[in-house]
Length: 135
Image 1: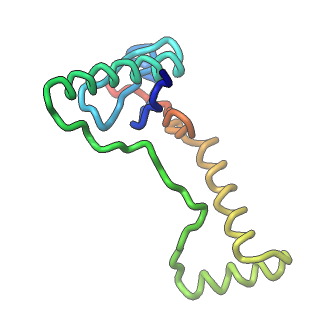
Image 2 (image 1 turned 45 degrees about the horizontal axis):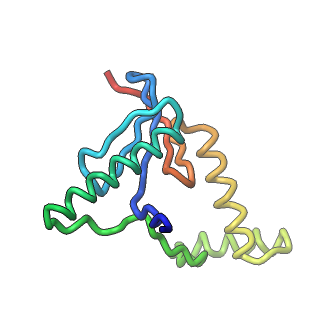
């Protein structure tokens, strides 16, 4: 029998206080586990969430809505002030690229800068994020 894909977000964070990775499933309050690695914590969160969902089903409760299935089309509508639109257009023309290509480059560059300088780095697959424990 084929295992059904897990359809809930798992967020994994490093905790200085616990000296461990903490994984949680936001759709299931109380579903929080520790792991020595981000991967182990994510796996344990999936197991714990599965148990919680099974118990909910047995008790006749409706599970929370699925929140991990995102449909990213690759298209984004962005509203800009006219002056900024003009500036972006002028830069794109000067560089010999389309506005779309320039915007893609600027967004990617900005995301890279943010990731490099921020302790709260979001990871693509598990939603892994480093966090500093607050005393």
